[in-house]
Image (tube, helix red, strand yellow):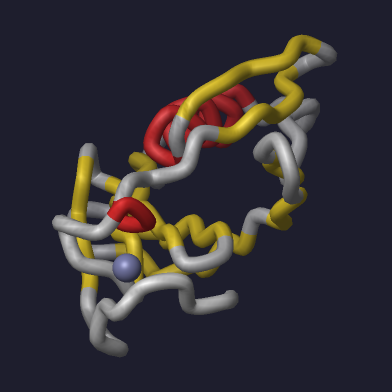
Length: 111
Ligand SMILES: [Zn+2]
């Protein structure tokens, strides 16, 4: 990731549940990106938080026609899914990451 600003390493912004690493809230790059992705052959637009809601829905319904590739006008990103384990209430926790952005998702493991 090319640094085009003077934000300190380790800076972090959380906006609309998306954690953006490497930038401060005052920085223009601290805004979550908007992506386009495919969901069952349809194009969807939104932030990583919007994608995460769709991802949750697909995890429940078990279908897998949601693309793991998210695009901006100029770039293409691969979704990274990290399982963070289950908690005492059987909720499964995941972190979804795209470039320097990530969101936390939890899924009811009992369903
Ligand atoms: Zn910055």
